[in-house]
Length: 489
Image 1 (cartoon, rainbow, N blue to C red):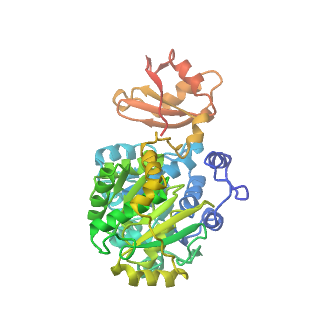
Image 2 (cartoon, one colour):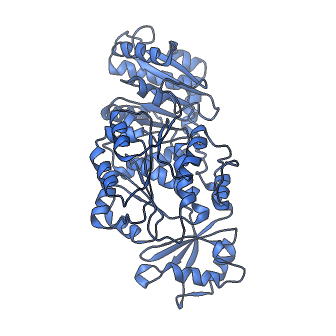
Image 3 (cartoon, rainbow, N blue to C red):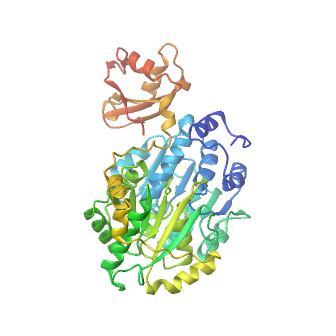
């Protein structure tokens, strides 16, 4: 990011996050966004588009402002959480507060969050509209709005909600729209709400990267012991494929929610540590499963297209299509999750008789014939040690992957302080006390989050231990408080 004009705080955060060289979409979007242009960008998941809009939003945010200046719309709750975290990390050195709002969780907590100082709000259209009607989401200072994953947003039926939100905006705002595909509904919204936007087309949908080795396994024929196409034989064939490949970390796509349930149950029964996500799973469980997979607690994640759309994972060694996709674009979206950032990946698909026509359509679309693979028999897998290696991997002690932003831990300490809104604690009380400590200034105080009975504050520039020790004997609002080091967000 060296060639992009950014503030010291944003550059320092990007350095910690290892955003060293901008991706193609970041090179094209960030300068135009900083110049205030409306933008329409077509880009696939994994291209760095979140940072492309998050960096300008954080750069333009004013810390002294108490009401949000930017609103980001996401189609799903999982994407809302993911994008909120990325914006939070990028704006961390500027002490920016980012709120996320979505359904499936108690609205009371979100109401409390929105009453506090917030610079950026990320949310799903339905819950954003709810807060707008309640008056808890203030729009007066909004100057920038992002519609992310617009094609998925409209596929899920949010066209009317997005239009209502846009029509409620105070005067002219900067509008940025990001989409994997540009269909008629997306183009209609652009025509209605944007004037002379900058169009940025990053990649053709037909592109599949050279770092992904593709293959198909025919469910019928020599691979199947009984040469039939029933579900039991398909599972056994897939299980042998899984043993043969022994992936370190993979996503497995199914065509329906029921198939996700069935496959997850069968794999767990066979000792495979896996998780699943689809639309009928409780929201909290979905978010927990995604975090477990991202951290390495789970090696395998089974999902439907809609549930997994847009969610970004690093270092996937494999993508499996247990059910072959029903559309050519879906195939490209799925397999594009592996082989990223110069790493090698494998994308292997189960193909039944009913999938042969779609396989041909996909091959024409990606301009290549996908080679057919033969899966070893269970006896061969046992004889060559593959079964034992697979079982050993399932029993391996999990080595957790570092969280994104873990580099901040070296210079930022998060403290919890006893006392919150119920005891009339205010952010100013915390700032005044900490700034009175010798050798500590306002620049050393990060984000302050006042809750009902606790207050969290981030101490920057490696001064956390110094502040923690000093607050053991220093009164805040006339009382000695319990002050402890706590887990980073």
